[in-house]
Structure formats: C-alpha cells, structure tokens
Length: 551
Image (cartoon, rainbow, N blue to C red; front, side, top):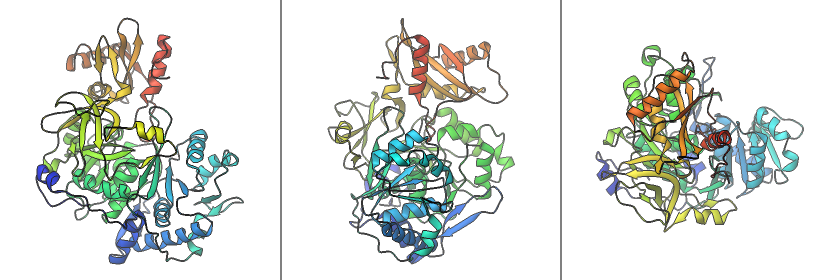
C-alpha cells in the first residue's frame, strides 16, 4: 500500500500497485503491530495550554484499546454494531476508535458542535447501539436519549453517572489482551455522515481498506512521509474524513506521532503556538484555517516553526492563499481533493514537481480520476465536467447506510460522480470549479464560485468570502459576495465598490460581484466548508424569488 521510491510523478503513478492483505484490521494496524515491534515509540501527544503536554506510546494504545474492546463486548456490544464517538481530539477518542475496529464493530464519529437535532438524526439513522462521549456531549444526549431506542450503552470520559458508565473504570477493570476479530478489506469499519452542504446528510459506510487506500495520498502530499522527526497536527475535527483519514489514522499506521489539541474556535495565534511548541513538521490545515492564519503578521519571527509540509483540502485553496503561504512560511501548500465517499484521490506534491497555484494536483498513484459528463463519459481535455473516480478503489465507500437507491445514483458507467465540477489540462492537473449545485448562471454564463472567492480573498481587506448566485429577473442570477473583513477594516459602500472592481479587473466583466454584503461570519460546516445553500436561500428571500435548488 506504500509508494515505491521514485522521484518522478510519472514513475510513481506507473509503478504503484495495490497490495492490501486479506486479513486487514484498522485497529490492529495502527496499534498492535507497532506495539509488537516498537512498544515505546510515541504515537500520540496532547497539547495543553498550560504547557503540561502529555504523550502516549504504542504499547499503551494497544493495551488500553484492548481493555476497552473487552469492556464493550462485556456490555453486549457485538460485531457490526454502530458505536458513536462524540468527543474532541483526545487520547480517549483514539483508544475508542481502535477498540471498536478490533472488535469488528463500526465506528460512528460525531462532532461535538452538532446540535441535538443533528445528533438525533445521525444516531437514529445509524441505529447506534453505544456511544462514548464527555460531559458536554452527555448534556446534549440527555435531551434525546428517550427517542433513541437502539442506544443501550452510554460511556463518558468525565466520570460515571446514574445512567452512564465510566470510560476510565471500564479500561482499568478489563484485561489488556484482546484477540482482534478477523476482518477483510471490505468488512465495514467506519461510517461518516456527509457534511450536509447539500441535501440531508447520508451515512457513508467504509470498509477497513479505506485506511490502506489513504496511504499513497498521505505519502505523496507530505513528500516522502514519513521522514525522521515528522509529527502531524490538524485543527480539523477527527469526527470528519479530513481529520480522521487525512491526518490521524494514516499517521498512526506509518508510525508518526499525532498531536491533539483542545476543542476551540480556530485561533491563529494558538494554532501557531501549537505548531511551535509541539514541533509539528506536517500540518493538515484546511483553506479556511490557512486564510485565518494571515491575521498574524510575520509568524516566523514570532514563533519557532519547524514545518516541513502543509496539506490542505475541503474547499478550494486558490492561488492567492497558495502564494501567501509560500511567501510567509516558505512552504508550497500541497492541495489535495476528495470527499467523504471517496477521499484523497487527487493531490499536489511539490517534491515531485506536482504543484501549481490554483490547481488541486493530479491523480494520486493507485487512483483513476477523470472529468466526465452526467452519463459517465470522459470529456476532452480542457472541458468542464464532474470530477469522477473509477471503481473499484480502496478509498471508495461501500455505500450509503440504508439507502441503496442513493448509492446507485452516485455512479454512472462505473464512475463515482462527486458532484464537483472541475477541468483537467493536458498535463493532468485538475482545477476545482465548485459544486455542480453551486454554479452561478448569469446572462448565459456558467460561473464557478471558487475562482471568484479566490480573487476576493486576495484583496487586503477580505479575510473570508463566499460567492453565490442571487436570483435576478434580467440575468437569471447575479453574482453576490458575502465578505468577512480583516480586523481593522470598516464596512462601507466605498469599500464594497473597491472589492467589486478588484474582481472585475482581475477576472472578467461577467464574474464580478454586482452585490457585496459584509457579514460578521459565514455559515460553515464543522469541516470548515461554506454552506452556500444557506446564503442562496438568504439571497433568494431578498429577491422574493424562491431558490430553485432549495426544492
């Protein structure tokens, strides 16, 4: 599953071949196998704001996860049961994941930022039989537990209560030896709900092979990963494919320590402090977070950074942010691409000369990616269409939980249709244009929001930006921009005009925002993606015209 030692991308892509064992279990691969050959190797470190940082070895991870697996089995939880993890980045989160995989159950990671309705929907849809959470999660769960008949066991990391069990007591009271169940690559291991940027969230079910499938992308984006001294951190919640599969689990499998940090609203100074104090060499930092890092002037003078690589995904990075990181941190960001159903299939790698501002990158070795139409037919070079991935593929989901019809609609002619628009050039570089349902139709033009947003964030006053189509009786839609200003700038009609002109002179006459609205914040999913659907609905209400994509 690892990349061969090749310097040229063409050689890497040609010579790579998948080799996933018939007996492959994520839990064993990320803990027990390392515990057997390097038990005292550090696998996890936790950043504490007070400076009392913690660490855990593979020996400890293997032992504690085995104890928890024994405890879960003793509670009547069985292979195939869905067990939720409603926790922040923490050692307990990793122990929980590993234990669930070892016993053959299905991990259901959930974000603490979810409200009670979102939690109820996911727990009920998945039929979760157990959950591991903290006091914060327990408080939200208490409002809906009576409506979750499948939920039998509730475990809390913050001590036992009348109707819950103590995580630490369960670990302490059960044996540290556990025989991991036999699982093949296609046996279910993990269910991650889609972020819900469009439509109701769906549970994407993955087999144990999904982790093996992420290794080439991880090694490619982080340029020869692992190297001596490598250490990974991400501000992304481990409840999502980004934090879990673009950082945590692949790093543990490859023997690289992973830094966890307390849950928080993203703070640029704190992010730099974490990376400096913990000696982070490899960051997975989504585009929104990278843009927020701009608020700290001259960070290399203020913080002792040892960053070697930065990977980014989740939204379009854009040329402006790419160039800013290159200039400020002396690193070329390796942008990559995927989605919950089929992740880490396109990537950049500066070390392999696959790096271009404004482009996602090329197909990761082992993956077949193309631009296709809605029938699954490959389109000519340079023509816009859907980014699609050919099956079979190790990172491809097994299907949507309980929704065979939606699973079938996801494919055309053996291509998984991502719903994302892109364009591929003659060299194989793919440019992300936006989601198909985010495309703006104005005066006969089809306009992707990504390029506009990238241009907007290049303006010195703009911290974050989102572009949507606002219904218009003359042009069908006009481009409207929602702007979060850099601290120190004040909203005004004059500034709005300057921002519109900035885009007009840099892109084209038909792409500039005819309306600019300044907002305090943008609606984001917990993965940091802009929920443009909500902005479209807001703009449609202003225009007194129903949003055609809301039905």
